Length: 323
Image (cartoon, rainbow, N blue to C red):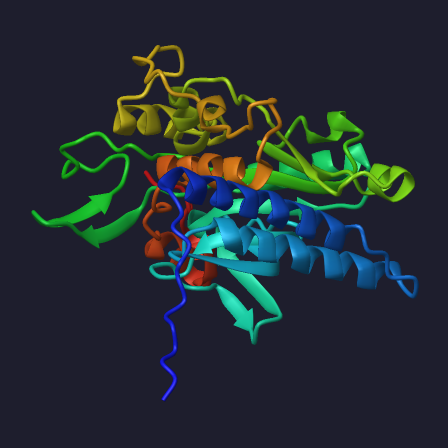
């Protein structure tokens, strides 16, 4: 009887495995960029839907499973404002209820749950339109008005609450804003976004150079303290009455104060090769998840505020502002 020889496994060092992982991300970037460059000759809408699906699959590679990712959603706040359609939203689905959903096609999600909003565009981006889109997202207001069980006791997270013995690290959150587009052009359209992802579709198709992506982060070199203020204490002055003061007191937060720098920026999380070529998707994985960890869990859901919005008696007879 012939004895089968056991195949020898090729030993790979740790350094080799690290290089293979990095190369895998480069190949992933090229694959996604090439897919995004495919045109659908029949209908522009089909092309747009196809590209949104590609971008969505890319973010699924990057985002932790604790978040849910969906296409074509609307965001609502407890003041009754509703966003324009959001191409892709990344949000908490574990603790926050939908305000409304019809199957998997139509979803209204509370602003308190939304961690990232993504706008997907082709090459020619209308700056006025995307600026209006960003402004309407900015106008949505989170509410610090929830009742939750903590380890010590029940906690009512309300600016005037005497039960809150410790400062809140979140008072007026906003989603991380990302613009995804074709071709590294019209950089001015991305000035109101935190992250802009582009592909080199045109150059690749014309010159035959490899498909790849580029990434720009506004404020990439800023200390993470800057991002904490941007994401967790966003624009208190947009609230009416004495709410800005209450939010500042709740957080012990002063817009003019300087917190101790952490000495860490998003630029520190960039991954490049020895020639300075950035590994875009690997860098994005570290940078976006760092921002998500700063934002951490979205604000606790303010059930009373949304009940007031829909209850006809309270909506007419009482202000929806927390007093």
